[in-house]
Length: 465
Image (tube, rainbow, N blue to C red; front, top):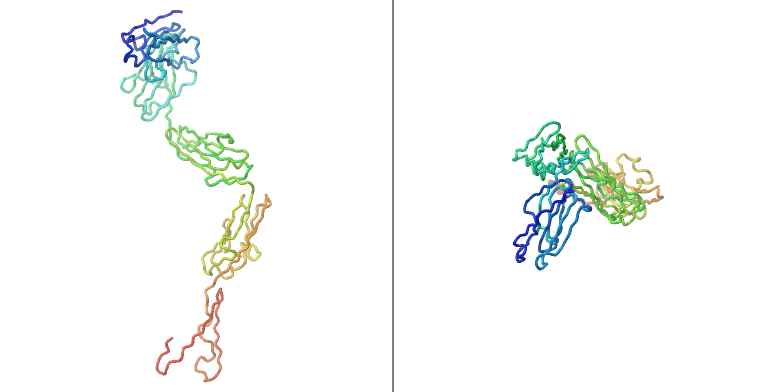
């Protein structure tokens, strides 16, 4: 193993502590170092406060070859020194090495170290599966094929054989970053590779570009209104998200007992010809009263956010509550276009309802009668619709039944059957004789009849009423 000791550089301001070391100082003046694989990397850092090192991602947090020595230094031991040793240094350790203050992370010094390896020109060794890089609107597209040698000759190739040369305006090559496309177009959607040849052997890093789509088209639950259920029963809520092709969404729930983990959540994805469908099913096997409340489905796709919700009501047991709405007697008018008999009914589960009129099934007596949920609707109200109506409600599976009776009064406008006085001879009658006048009328309630008499006018004058 070859050992390299990097020269320790002393700066004049090392000994001047007034206003110095606002940032830590490394013992190297170059911005980059180049060493070979299996050599030892040694870096020294000095500063006014306690120091810490930030190493490249390729250096494991627990690595037997990493050693850090921390001491107090300076003429009066009023400075802090830290020595980093990495042995053996490997190709995957290539990257930026930073020394910073433990309490002031922005104050730092750094150097980029290349650890060359003829058998590993790229820092990352890929598996058979290409890495995914994301092409986002208004952002740079980066193919991160970093190399272990700054002089490596690397080409960008679009599958199968389209070689793309850097122009250093839109297509830029940087050995520390890879290829950067400043203004990517749809051309850059597909399979790409960074390729280099070392000693006649071709090496490559492959990348599959993905253009994220964040448009959420629709979010809905399988139950749009209130959810009524019984204690001990199972609850299943399905949140369905419709999004564009290539979209990736995240679905999460908030619900009353989330902290206790009372629900299980199952997710699945399907595709249609035009959209992607994402499903998230929340299930609680046995409900308790603590599970009642608001259930929210939250959906995010990149910066896009949507949500929908429903309220779950949990009852202790099944029930029927049936009362009069406007008293036991209700009134309608003959000729009315429609009239609705509607009592106050609360029940769970939903009961079966049958309406009777005078003890017979109402719908079988007249085609003008029809049930609308819990109400009985009477069309073209007539006098014969008056009677006694009974609503029968029942939840047979739980043995619950309750009835309620209403009396319908149909008001009829008064009508006079004879508008003239009935007389065999409507002319003059003999003075002092007895005559009988008849007036026939009908209405509901029964009308009051009042007789009016007008004397005959003198001869030659018309009768005025």
